[in-house]
Length: 232
Length: 383
Ligand SMILES: Nc1ncnc2c1ncn2[C@@H]1O[C@H](COP(=O)(O)OP(=O)(O)OP(=O)(O)O)[C@@H](O)[C@H]1O
Ligand SMILES: [Mg+2]
Image (cartoon, rainbow over all chains, first blue to last red; front, side, top):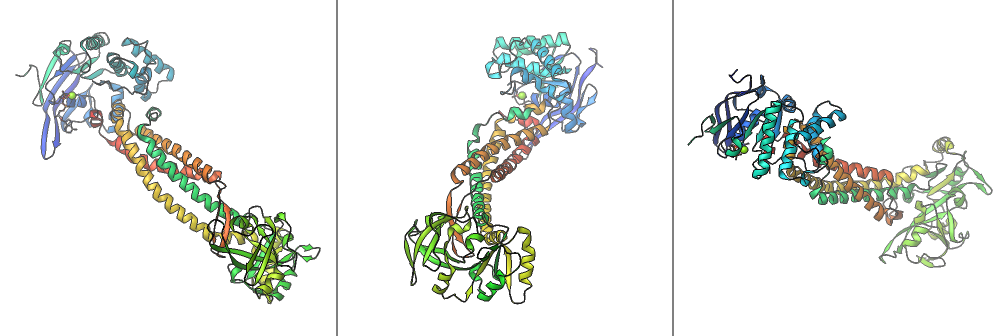
């Protein structure tokens, strides 16, 4: 337990090694990270430094080569693929740089996707979807397809999809990376609101100091470890 | 759930749809040939009729029976009595050569000499033009298919075979049966012309009912004076057609299999590019917590849908192009021409569609498993 309260994310001694040809790439090197519940954490660092790799470990779509990843007290790196998939559907929301919406589905149907893995009735699902789209200010865009929405709007649909199952943690990989300043600010406002008003723990990878300034803490990826100061 | 969504886009699938359509068209087409051939061979055989050959003979060509045997056969129990005696026709079967209309080259036609009772035994025979031959005269009637296939077989035409000249006095049908590929005359005229007065080749008899067959057969085969083989006319025709039917089916299966292998590669290719195009979507779905199964199912369903579209087009094409198409082939049992119509049946179309579905499953399975197995992070990195 840190002084800020309950620890939600606890990474200890995590290594991630990729093989490229005959060479081993140590992308994460005995990395430690503690994130208290309710924190808005920004991760920065040069391209290729392993930010996305770390986020993937936290979201349970990848496993560390060594070390442990505990989320909410669960050691997720030990779960089977099946259990891990189920765990993801309950506990994390992903927000992607390129939104990753399904182009053939309307906004509402995109947001509905994670709910298909629950046993809610279609009526309950409908209600959850409307609430989520309302929270991102898109209740008037339910039946629009992604191509009929601006980038900022698409990202807001992406956020609605991430929060529709009410996960405790949101993992955002460069959520404003593809948006102009104005649309990006709206997304950051939205994340800020979700963090403050709904208590979501947010971990956001970004290259933009303007974005990281909105977070409560910023860590820097450097040589496979996280630093509190921007390295020279 | 998600497969419905993945199935909506088709993109590059045109080629494989047409590939599968081609396979199914060939598949259905070939089987319709076999079907039509069998139809012609079995269309008119009546279960009430029996065909008697010398035992050991597999076709009329190879059979010969003596005149006395004919009398013993017609006296056997179970044969229907007509006004002029039992309905039994002792027949001669020779093969003559005539020029084909299509190519001008000679091909074989069966010339059958029949007894007086022949038209009562085979009551499907119908004269559609002219009249029956007169007993004792060098007159013939010609089956509709033979008349269409060979030159010089129209009404009032005369043709020469060896020293004999024959006059066409009528054209007949047999509800699409094999006799339509034959020429008929009086056995009493044909016998001397071919020096066969002392024997005949086959007897056709009409029985009181279909159930009489067994006792009739027993009576003949147990008679010490005879060495004969007794077959129901329906079975006789299907036996005659089995060889060529199997040959057509085997050849067709071979061609269709080769084409199917091509089509499977086409489908594989289509499905791989479809999967590649949506790798990131698949990665996203799996990141959201969907496991591999919906991905596999969706890709399979899409692949099967493509195959079904292709299969329907191919089946329709085959039906439109082939159904009822008139053709002729050699009957290897008698080395003469048999005319028949391609027959595309609903059951053939269903078989064709099943075949297409199989191609779809095989073509979709591999890409589906690959997509489902790909690490989520790899799928998400795809652009
Ligand atoms: N599956 C993989 N196989 C091999 N190497 C990989 C794999 N995934 C990532 N890498 C490598 O690991 C390194 C870190 O990748 P990562 O995506 O985590 O970087 P990043 O910090 O998110 O960069 P960016 O800011 O460009 O998004 C990169 O050099 C990348 O090429
Ligand atoms: Mg990255």
